[in-house]
Length: 327
Image (cartoon, rainbow, N blue to C red):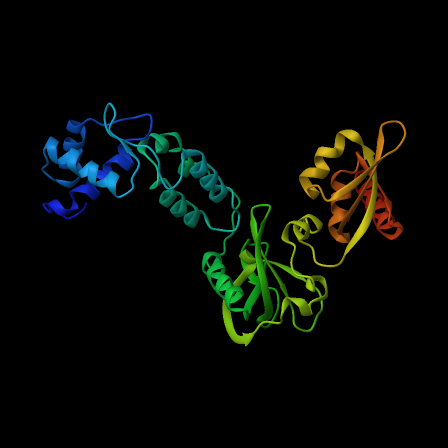
């Protein structure tokens, strides 16, 4: 509860009431505002003061309608934007359940009671698969600062044991040049580079602990072969759909026309199509070789990788191994 009795706070208290109890479809009468001021803040007020304070709020730029009652017409986020933000937090696997619920509650503070009634079930959902790394949010902060200041980071990289707990994957902390944070499949990844190598690495942030920003400057991006022309993030994400490291290669795939939407979903519009006979098409796309291997297995019944030959041979071997297991 706010401190009570200070009339200088009246316009802010009325604004809080309008944020919580009104929207473009629900208005409050002067009497309802007076009642809520007394009920929520133990603040006495009369009808004339309500009107004069609302007029002051309008002068300050708040979009408040006084037609057939008082209502706050616009907010920092509209309902659809809040829903998108809440769903993004809810289905993120990179933060813990406790952190997710805390963020959702903060987002709900920006909405009216009418919106919150619609999403009241959200915080009562069963726990979704999430990281057990409670340092993940802190790590994101440190990484953002390091990227901004173009400095190296050190961290412990972990794997998950059969007890479902994190354990160090390497004996010593790793040092990486950080370039960008991206989200993929509900998880945050760091795009970076190890000094002694010339390639790009993708590291899951929820597997990183003890993240520290170092004093040493990061290697410039242009000194990494894959990034010498800068980081084209949409293209990079399309070529590294499973966030594997390694080079991207040109791939030819034969499939049917009804698979076009799947290609758009995974690769955007950065591919070419050639019509063949019998309703077939040939798609040319540039993709990380390891990612294409797994993608081809995922869509195995519907597509055929025809080139490059060495990738095709690897996929054939994978299919044969799978066939043996399912005999």
